[in-house]
Amino acid sequence: MKGSKSFWETIGELLKTNKLAIFLEIAMVILPFWGGVLLNGRIGNDHISLGGNLILLGGPIVYLGLAVSLFLLWSATRLRGAGWGYFGLIPQKGWLRPVMLTLGVALVTLAAVKTVINPIINAIPAWGVPDLSRFDYLNGDLPNLIIQLVVIWLTAGFLEEFIFRGYLINRLTDLFSGRFQLAWVLALVAQAVIFGLVHAYQSPVGMFKVGVIGLAFGLSYLAIDRNLWPLIIAHGLIDSLDMVSHYFVGNEPELFTNSCYAVQDYKSLTQTGKYLKCGQDFCSLPRRSA
Image 1 (spheres, rainbow, N blue to C red):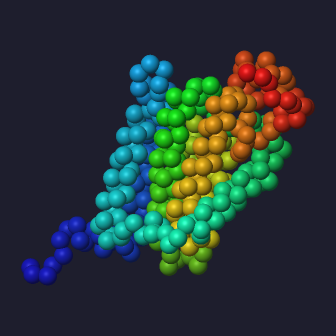
Image 2 (image 1 turned 120 degrees about the horizontal axis):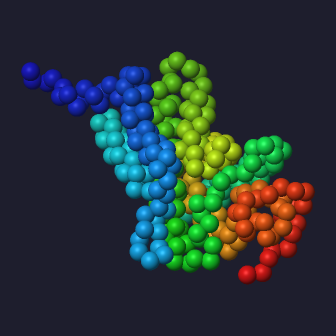
Image 3 (image 1 turned 90 degrees about the vertical axis):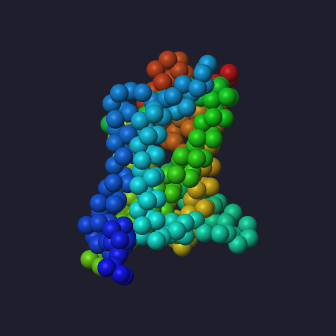
């Protein structure tokens, strides 16, 4: 019949307003990536060998799941007729405002870590500390550090912000709107929870910490009118500083975002790779020589 909508046009219309369709879209986008992370943790294949001592952190299942999620995300976005602006990837006018916004996001996030997250973790010894041992191989290894920095900017900096803030906050707001007056609050909390869960490799306390960081990034995203570029740059900078700290100090706590954990002595720290608590604040100790 002339003027009738095609199957894909009908699907696109449903994805705009139908709550069940929006929910199914979100589930189909998130589950491949999340499932890849969980399955990768089960089989223990956490890297891809690039030859020699060079590795690409993250198993093939993770990258496959991420690719599927991105394909489904973009396909659904196209069906709805949305573009890059929907996510907050908008052209920037000038350089001063984006730079100031980036610095603001980074400072807010680091402040949240130092003044809220770390004190909570340190106040509950039973929680332990985030497990970041997967990054131990970076200690003193410049070639792998360079590879990891490139990966960090692409995956953590761009793709995580694109998926969790640019996509998930907006789609969850679409899902909750009409029924709840504070749809954006629910969207903000939900994306932070999901963001924490996909970092399961960092242990439960690590998931808590990443979830709160996701909450800080989400608040920043809404506060700067859903402009995603400052978050991408801030996220990339913060994670890059953490990777550089692994390069210089190895198993010691990160210089920029981790807590100052008490340790027994340098020997126990280097042998076990754990941040042992015994009463003396690690940050008060002199750095050991190479």
